[in-house]
Image (cartoon, rainbow, N blue to C red; front, side, top):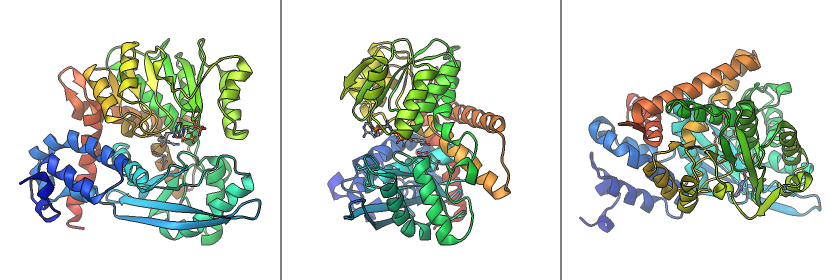
Length: 458
Ligand code: NDP
Ligand code: 2IT
């Protein structure tokens, strides 16, 4: 049969080819390239494993795992400071709840659409599974752009967004958190409206402020965890972060705490960036410069160019950091920010490791370059799982009505990152080389798939 003749029904085979599976996926999800990209990467590394485990094929686990439990889309109307009515679109994807309540962030960015949120929610299923904590996969957000909006406008938007979202979430149902464009200010407004509507103080959102049920280390967790993961990868080659020249992209939550941990471990962070350009810091970002970046991005909400101006540093408008010679790269801005050419540049300039702080920051072509060069490549669903892991621990603390200390949480975060690394190695070893993509995908999949098998056909 020609691929074009394949239909939904002909897909109901107990053992279908990867090719046929992908054709069917593309037919069912038109106009969603990021979602297709994320599933393709997972399916490619899982397929040989699935063929050795016909029970997953027979139960159509891949078909079921790539079909969200449900997706909610809604209108978000609000009034701007000039009195004009604005309309945005809100989303929540509850992708898979087999191992726990849906869990995943909210992204507010003008590029947000259904396909991007589906890719993020799909990645989140396997990432959350890898943490070892009981969390299903979800994601949500809006095409609302917080940039250039007043605090009052952001608050009004968040209140309107939550007014609809509230009916779909709950401590044991779905627990949102932050992502791009959703930081402590937005989480505060979202939580405020949720608590007001429900008249109940719960842990239904994570990333909360310390005054109202937040957890130590949650802000730091994604960046710290990503650096811990890099350190684990380097250890397999008897190497460490000390003295390593590192490129960090982005200058938001993940980038800031990546830089902070690199500094603490004696590595040299040479760059930060934002959607307008890259700043080079040849001697490495020190704690004074990092404090400036945090104030600039979190409080004054300015552009990274102002950091270059303040310290008389080189600013490369419109450029990404990837042609600066380095030892390690920490992409921490957004999806598909390292393409095949960027990856070739990195490898040619001596890069020995990549630890993905962002979700799917490397294109398929880029991943291929890294793997062919046999450099250490930690995919986002493993390397950036520290954020959601500490979110999971925020949920636990809220349920138990207690607070663990910063030190306790940092130790738990380190343990979780070490465990994730071990799982990647045990499923991803290919001779001398560790294929962390394959390892993360299989290890994340097995727990979810086994839960789905146990639940029967639902
Ligand atoms: P922030 O909003 O705090 O920061 C995002 C940073 O990335 C900013 O510097 C922003 O630049 C830049 N950026 C965003 N979109 C683009 C784009 N399209 N092109 C170029 N630059 C862009 O978000 P986070 O730090 O929280 O998130 C960064 C990445 O990490 C995302 O991929 C997210 O999904 C992932 N992640 C986040 C976790 C978390 O706990 N927050 C957990 C795991 C993964 P500008 O300031 O100009 O907008
Ligand atoms: O991509 C991610 O893992 C996040 N944005 C964090 C999700 C969470 O629930 O903490």
